[in-house]
Length: 464
Ligand code: S3P
Image (cartoon, rainbow, N blue to C red):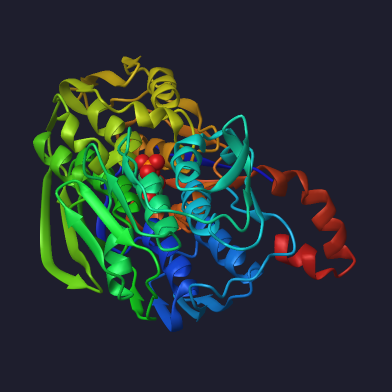
């Protein structure tokens, strides 16, 4: 069944909301909790499809996990050498983070594993992880660099010193996790800072991770001690609301308990450079991660040249930022963002197509985009229909565009919104967006469910 969003034009965002838990931290909480000695309690866990895939994968390797229930998860760690061979393939669904981090974590196990994913994930590049892991001694086969990924057990790993060719937290994390199983020290040097949740969380589990400038290192053979993890709200999910409130005049919205790790706050810096009014309130540290409430009010935005050094710190937020750029006065230019081409979709091509479909002049480039902002006009976007290409962040970004639309924006293929943001339409509606979710399958199934209803079927009642 495929769902879609139908978003009415205009409105503003207000009130106080909390978006779901951080996806990156949720994945890692299961992975490290599973490898630890003892029981790890997690709260604020993202109950989205991606993090659930990771949870099911560890269950398949013999880890007992309770939950999620209202964001609470209990992971009974099996220790660094306690995972068991799974009976079948491990399904990462849509989750690139799960697959890439698992490649590192599983390539040093004594048993074989096969990592598979959905249609989108099956097109994403895995060589960037497979190649350095092979240098460590891992035996990995892919299908032309893409999933399925076969990890052949029993490899003996040795630490390497790896200068990463691209700024990728997933590659860095995969190598550090493999490093736990390697002889000697594994060091990764990043060309620009990327999210450091793996390093922080490993430290929280009692593992020594050294940091010297751009290099993070871990020595093999260390054990993890179970801990408590409080997952903050995901700044990447907050991003849609930050942009929505910033572009819609009269908005005044507070986003509660948002993770503001400095390796993730590029969105705040970029929006502020554009003239957005964002306040960080009540900053505190929770379980090794900084957290704050973010208050954002509608304001006039101006186009900017996005500083390239901020790009990796806002990498998942560009779909939303492109919407902000369209609502700014003047031109916005993004460069150094070629990584956007290998996300859940080619986010440069798909966003440019969508913006053009709604009447905004957006020119894709090899590594970014040039957007002619129409902030001088109240209605920036025309009515139109957007192909999200099954990319959750594309769908949610265009939903916010309707706040400055002259007519409805229809967004196709929105099922994957639930990978990172279950409950998005309801929460967005509560904040003030005129959004309706449609289930294509449900309408078609209507006669069937009516027949069930006549026959007194429970399924019919549930669907009616
Ligand atoms: C992630 C790292 C980023 C990001 C992804 C989550 C992580 O990917 O885009 O959504 O949790 O480490 P890259 O490492 O490929 O940049």
